[in-house]
Amino acid sequence: MKRLMAILCAALVVALPLGGAGAAGIPVQQHDAHWQAAYKLAQTVRTEAHVHAEIARLYDSDPGKALLQEPAIAELERQYPGIADVMMNSIRSYSTRDALERLPDLWERFADIYADGLTDAELAVVQAFYESPAGQRFLDATIAGLDPRPMMAEMIQRSERAAEASDISRMTTRAGVSAVGQLSSEDQAALMAFAKTGAFRKMSLLAPRIQQASADWANDQSPELMAEAQAAMVNAATAYMAQADLAPGKP
Image (cartoon, rainbow, N blue to C red; front, side, top):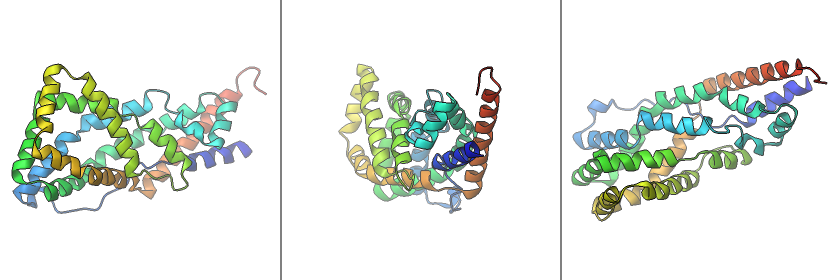
């Protein structure tokens, strides 16, 4: 019973924001052309492929490491090596399903910001760059460099377990700087040319609002999904411990 309670407490601790159902807004096709151009830009800079890449980065390399910041999970890991990874991997499918199902909601949040802060001409300039081969390679390199694990470790230590805009800013800044260094000289030149435009400067000014929208979206939790994820984590941990207890020499 003591071990089961430890698992339950750990599951509650690691119930990091998976997100929830966003509020239904106006159908995309009913917005004006300016907003729809902003929505297209949002879809370009935040694709389904990018979501899959981020989730793979989180789960494919030592996924349980961040959880060890929590004493209850660290103790479980001491008794059952590998259990932190098992617990994290047990909710991978929930994270993936939730992120993809709610991605249109994030696009709408981004579109509201882009539509408010950029003119038609500026939207066209930004869209043209990110649709270009150089822009696509820059986006791909940036997404590949995103590492959410430090952010997760910080969130676990907070009482509210919530993502903050500053977390998003640090993560994306590190990835962006790294991405520039990976580009060819031709792609760097294209990026620098884009950086000299007024549209780029306006996009930079919108960054804090985009980061806050991203954090709010991540924290928009669904009680039903959280319950499912917690149950999956408890079941996976319980099964792992039961199997380990059957091993020869296990006290």
